[in-house]
Length: 414
Ligand code: ADP
Image (cartoon, rainbow, N blue to C red; front, side):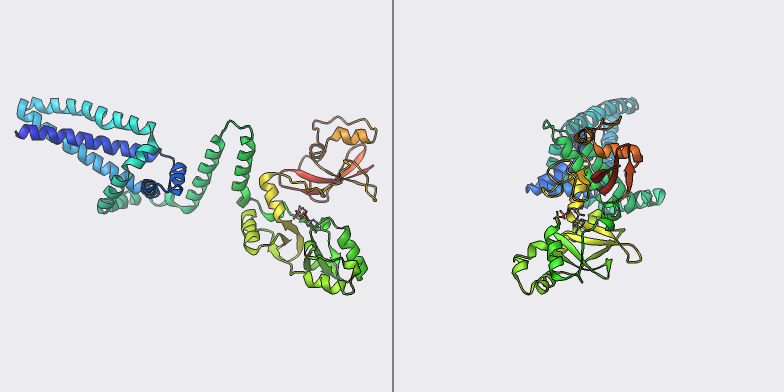
């Protein structure tokens, strides 16, 4: 009778051991991203899994502790059982049989099951494992104390964790693939979002030389003319020196015909809002958050001495994520039309051969098909704002660029 009870107990312990090893595999193999998705959909069990994953080290320790306890107990009971039947030889039989039984039923089978459906298994076992971990808290505390005193804290350094976490996410994005060929664009955008905090506003702003601004001391008519000639929505106003910005006018707030008004200047100055200055070391993520918080679209970038370097708008940051956005009025419709200063302003993506052809010239030998590519080839780097490069026929001046590409170019004939 006692032997039968012993046998039942051993079988129960082997099954329990299988449950614990399967749980350990499910918890290590499940995808946290999928669990978070399930939590958002209201799955109650997913909440337990998430709590377990957030406390993974401790839970794994609990599982290993209980699994070893169960395995050792099962083996000891088996030894007693076989010793009773076969005497000293029983110890040998017990070792042999228990090794095979434990490997097959308590390790390989449950782990294979769990690795093939980790999320489903994790959801199933999570409440039990969650409470098991709670009940073993005191033992785990001491185990961790010993482990930490050996490994110190280096692995728990928050900076390390941040880097690991970002690398993990970048890796997951790299793995992302769908049948829709546009997935590459999606992937690119996702990667760019993760780089926002590595890029400072200084790397992408519009240089002060290219800011379209208005002298606040001009007479009213001239101010109105300049406002009307501007293709920008937000126009800075300055006093005494173009770098001394006193405010910004959003032309959309002027919903009257200024020319027909006696008090035009007062109306304009009434709409001018205070400029917002930001340090050039601000990163794009911080700036994006600030733009949203303050409900503003334009900020002036200053260096550590408060000197104006340039301006940055929400669109500049969004372009870092989605790529160059060309406004309907950013660039003249006719590709290579000379403006009244005899210059052409084009997007860097325009075709180099087309430029030469429109002047009846023989295109140069160039590896790149775009004008931007051609400039990069000559300059061997992304030129600064306002920097100029030349080839046999044209002079190219960079009017704006993002960190990765030249977007607007002013071209004049040599
Ligand atoms: P808009 O709404 O006037 O088209 P955006 O905010 O969309 O302006 O910005 C488009 C590009 O023009 C950005 O690269 C931005 O840095 C630049 N920009 C915006 N306002 C000015 C300005 N007054 N002078 C020079 N560049 C500007």
